[in-house]
Image (cartoon, rainbow, N blue to C red; front, top):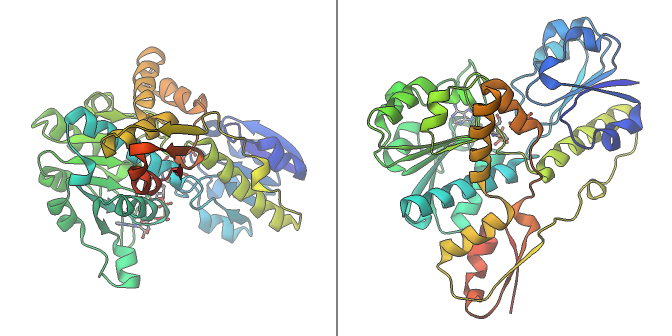
Length: 380
Ligand SMILES: NC(=O)c1ccc[n+]([C@@H]2O[C@H](COP(=O)([O-])OP(=O)(O)OC[C@H]3O[C@@H](n4cnc5c(N)ncnc54)[C@H](O)[C@@H]3O)[C@@H](O)[C@H]2O)c1
Ligand SMILES: O=C(O)[C@H](O)[C@H](O)COP(=O)(O)O
């Protein structure tokens, strides 16, 4: 069989070479012509999979090694009898690491404590749900907004978006791109809601770019300048708004989920789905994941809890490096090329759970907090 895939999918040969001939192409450039004689198409989020593409092909399987599926016309796939699989939750832990790394960095820069803030989570699925779990375990107050879940499960655990905006100091968006229907997310934070954000509020978007009205956000940041933005996703990627890039305290090129672990899990989940589709055996995920380069960190002295967290987080992942890379590459290579360069040549990054923190002496009292944030621990 012939498998056409995005060249940015890791472990392509290990996960898909076992099924047939693999042809790797730049994701943004895959067209209908490239797949006319392909049996399977494996993409990431930058390749729109449209009805036109599918109708002129002999595809029987399409996979997306990502959580988001808004780039795939799933109705067209069903109509043409094509099996579809994505990778739900594959990089959710990486996104939570990104959020914690960002908030701990801002807290240090602006001299506040995460434990004293209330964090509002909009979209409480795989990502938002895990974020809420980690924050709660760390003793951070949270509020959750998820109207589809509230409708299905009852609204006891949820508030509406306006209440969340009124009551939270940090607002994290983890919503998918949904255009119509009962719960659209296009410009969920629109000009009115952006105007209503409390002074001092941090707004973080690691869902999809168009969940925030970027122009309205730029106006608030450039005008009153009394809120802080952390943006990983943008309207019109890779042609992002330079003004917004410069005003965001942390600006990154849609890499919140780019841990090696998350990417490999994405490849593996689609490998497993294709294996089932072809009635073949499934590889063990452990065979793909290498041991981490930084596996251990030992703490002995008494440290302020959030200083200890920052130390552990930065031993694994420091979001400020991604911010610097986006600025450098978009300045020197142009916006679109620079944005995509940062993504295609992303440094190897592991997840918090790959670090074992040894806690000795006075530091042993930090065990609960360090564990709650997602690290492994050993203590005296
Ligand atoms: N920045 C990144 O690198 C990155 C990585 C992974 C996922 N994502 C994005 O984050 C999104 C969420 O990921 P997930 O794994 O949690 O998905 P998920 O499907 O598990 O959860 C999404 C949640 O959003 C809720 N939701 C839908 N419409 C809503 C609305 N109008 N208001 C509030 N909540 C709403 C859903 O009910 C669901 O609980 C993905 O769809 C993807 O677009 C981005
Ligand atoms: O939906 C997802 O899983 C994420 O947005 C993913 O990290 C996007 O990465 P891309 O497909 O753009 O490489």
